[in-house]
Structures are given as C-alpha cells and as structure tokens.
Length: 225
Ligand SMILES: [Zn+2]
Image 1 (cartoon, rainbow, N blue to C red):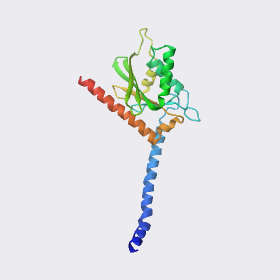
Image 2 (cartoon, helix red, strand yellow):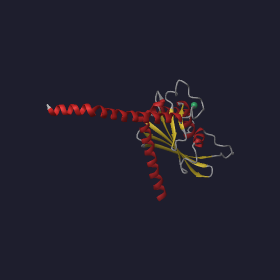
Image 3 (cartoon, rainbow, N blue to C red):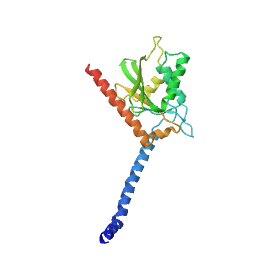
Image 4 (tube, rainbow, N blue to C red):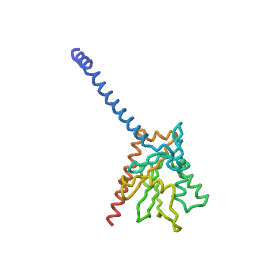
C-alpha cells in the first residue's frame, strides 16, 4: 500500500513534468522539421527548370520530376513531358527512330517510381565535357550508364544550347566541385512537394550520399591507375 502510494505521489509530482518534457522535445522536433521543409520549398525555382513555365497556383504538376544539383544551387521541378523530352533528345539524340524513342519513353515512364536518374558532367578539356546519364535503383545502385562527349560548339561553330547543357550551366560553378557537376532526378508522384517532406527527403539524401561515395571511390580508382 505504502509503496503504491509512494509511486502515485511520485507520478503526481514528476509524471506531468516528464510528459511535458517529452511533448516539448516532440514539439521542437516537429518545429525544426517543418522549418527545414519550408526552407526547401523556399529555394525551389518557381517555374519548370526546362521550359520556364510558372508553377500553377494550384501546385506543382502531378508526376513532375524533382531535380537537385550536388551543391543545392539548382533545385526545382520539371514537367514530366519536358523531362522525358530532354532525356530522349540530349541523352539518346542519335537514336532518332520513332520506334526506339517510344520504347525508351515507355521504359522511363514505367520504371520512374522505383528509379532515380543521375546526370553527370565532367570537364574533359576546354569547351568539352563528358556527360553521363545513369539509371539507378531506389537505393542508388547503378542499373545502366550512358556516356557521351559534348562539345560547346559544333563543327559549324554553333553553340550547343541543349536543355541539359543549360541546366548544367545553371549550377553555380564556384560552389559545385571543380571536377563534376551532378544532377539527381526522381519522379515525385501526384503531389510532388511531398518529396521534400522529412522522411521522403531523408531517403533522397541517402541516395544522393551513396552516389557521392560511389563516385569518390570510382574517381579514386581512376586516379590510382
Ligand atoms: Zn516545362
């Protein structure tokens, strides 16, 4: 009896305080997470990264792709169609056959929910870059890689103004690593901004970190040769 009373009194004295402490901690965690989410929303470009169409007031286009560069200086959404067009023309340009283009488009659309797409630009010399386009699984493991050399000017002297090169051009050259510029993309579902919420964004960051670690290992291996 005595012990039970003691426990009860102890609870009356300290229980509510502890509950409040737990609630306070939970509240500050929630507040922090919501603050970080707001910050991610604030840095977004307010238009499609490809065609500059403004994001409608009703919200980001369903099934838009979220894109972010390795230094965070480029972050925003691209309409699904704009994104597919960019990949098909800038990464598969020579496969102009309509049949291949249709099946590639189908593959991209069909696997979009369980894959990430990595675009990587590596300088090769003055006005010349290697551009890699990789498809990754949902953990960031490479599934396929497509590599090409892009020159700033064609043999006729015209400037390469492909969408992809413009996107890379928007990445802050000072901030981004001198060697490589990275853009990661993922189709973001029916309410695209949910990709920026706490849990979903953790997943995004985990995939991006893994990519950086894998690339550092690859670059280290190349440097050792
Ligand atoms: Zn667009």
